[in-house]
Image (cartoon, rainbow, N blue to C red; front, side):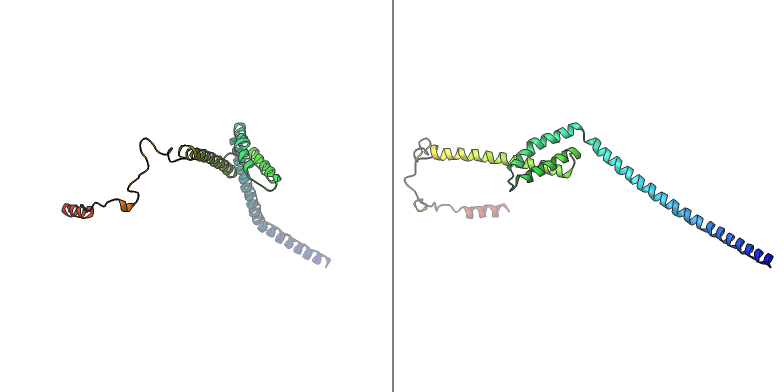
Length: 193
């Protein structure tokens, strides 16, 4: 019996080994597919990261030292006037804004939308300031003319012309009743067509 029981145990053991091997063989292709899919997703992720790195390197390459110097110059001149003209309740806001723009100059390119808007806003401020100054000069010139050149009725007379002494109102002017221009116009148009 011991022989029979040991042989049945061996037979059972062999069957379980065969079942384990067949299940391992069945799992192996599925496991390999999962591993290959995972490797493929890692490669795709790696390629995406490399593309982003190359893009960042290209953007950094665009931003040369000369460009940064130009941006810093614009910040120091054009934008400084604009920032000084803007009224804020607290000067720390201006300082934080300037610090942010300096970081933008160091870490960004000229094609950055924020930078372009700041340059445009500063240029608009400068243009409006120029136009305002021009209007002030024209206003001062006109005031001088009104106060000096045209201040009195005698200074407003040019040459031999003077103030009208007769025909001061519409009733004083005689109406010329001889010609009706609208009737003449109508007859000319009617004869043309």
